[in-house]
Length: 466
Image (cartoon, rainbow, N blue to C red; front, side, top):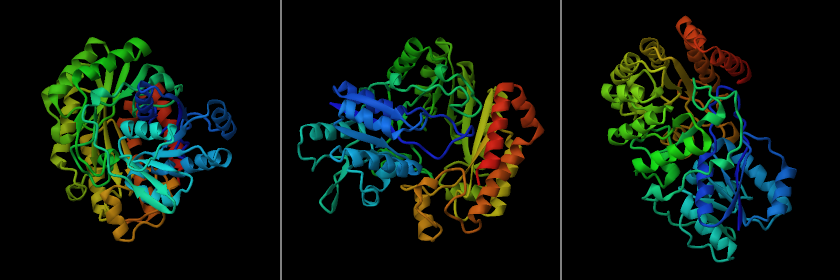
């Protein structure tokens, strides 16, 4: 059995964006390969999409089905690919998965007629079950974790139980990821050779429930269950990355990596033993000096802290479960410990009640905590988030042109106090105020290659995104 996995093309590009290899698809591929399925992976986010080549490959390999993984802003490109496939191979089932279709399975099938099936939530077991039934031409009704059509009816099957033992899932098949992005960063501040860096996820789910995030909804129906891989399993993957791919830096991108010292410390020791550098996200509320010092000693060169706002009122409305004082203390400790890169992430329009006074508090906080780098996103009402529910109930969302649901560019929604144009101006204002600061200028100059990368990125951001 042959199965095609596709990451669709996107309209979000440019040097401001971190490069994210499709490790989710590489993990799915590894799981299906373990079950005896031959998987072909096509990443059109990083490689040019060509309809004729895709159709030739379909003719050559005769896949049992084709799977597309989509975020909200790539659901339309996914359907464009599906339409092309259906035009020439109408009998090949098209399976869609990812956060957008998981959050709204019925609506997705109604809106996009060329999708036949949706894998809702966690994909490994559900996808294998579905593919097995399709290859044997068995009845798919009753397959847990899918949505599908039955004539004019849309059927949402019962949710599949989450995989309790993450160690049972094989490591991502990184050999399927072939892309050399020497001018892109995996994480802001880290302009490293693509072939020397990789990302690893050590858990699934998040203990918290911020209104702008749908990470828990991505795995199941609003479940907040957090599952961890064992320390031994994570260190085995790290060793494999070093031994087989000569990796020199690890980007840990899961939400819960640094929360448990009982896991963090031995993993960090392994990274030190292998002479690797690494980076991760931390929560301001859980930052402790002894842990930070241990991380620095073991090769951590960058920390990213999700701040979102300098206004405690907005933080509370976002359900961040942190305080402004905790943010100040966390950044102070990180500076004292001496990490090479300390990043703060912020959002404008993160809640529809945000005012100019709240934004000014963010500007003041940035000046006080002195991050080395910042990112500023526009609050986006993604399907599956509480933010979307709030904004929709207030009539603030103007359009569901999913292609434009991005953290940059002019939004298709407003807040109670800011128009779409206002939100873009505020985003650029915060970025400009920070990056035109002499302290930041000289900090970036310490690494000339990254300075010029950021200079090009900034010009592209300010002059191309409207």
